[in-house]
Length: 222
Ligand SMILES: Nc1ncnc2c1ncn2[C@@H]1O[C@H](COP(=O)(O)OP(=O)(O)O)[C@@H](O)[C@H]1O
Ligand SMILES: [Mg+2]
Image (cartoon, rainbow, N blue to C red; front, top):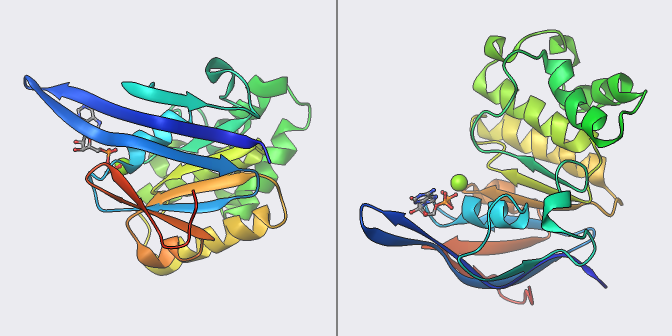
């Protein structure tokens, strides 16, 4: 099967205060259609760095990223790849529904963008907040809107960076279960970064991260 994204010894380091911080040690992994993968690790272990490389938002300092099924790095977002960011990422002047609709319009100006966006908001249980502004939402609601925005465009690769980080565990698990339900049987691949083992265990595979190193779960060929 052809891979959606492949990392070949991909590494990322940053310069900080004259020192080099190795955020991600050379990493080799692949994501295929239909995969359900958790990136599990403590804060600072390199999860966000790897997701940003997978989304093509950042480039590795060494090694290489490839997207055999998706094409060039500059054509991934929005559409083929969707990213749910760890930090708030909604556009402040736009209403909730307009935020969710935006990637749909950017992608192909769909006439049914509004209806599709509403359907995605229903999926995350926030249809009644459609006309609110982002500043009127709680952190957890904002994360759920960001999730709706990501799923609405039906990406081939969905990358979610601690999407339940501002929710209590029960609400977080319910959101993930809703997402998995929505994705059931679909070829969309999901990679979700979390430090919550209960969330990670909902996925088919767990990639453990620690100090920028990925140490695979037993039996996982990556
Ligand atoms: N832009 C950056 N500049 C400097 N250091 C960074 C930057 N991004 C990440 N780091 C460092 O790289 C390491 C991994 O970060 P990150 O990928 O955000 O981890 P996680 O998402 O698992 O919390 C941390 O030590 C972090 O401080
Ligand atoms: Mg992170």
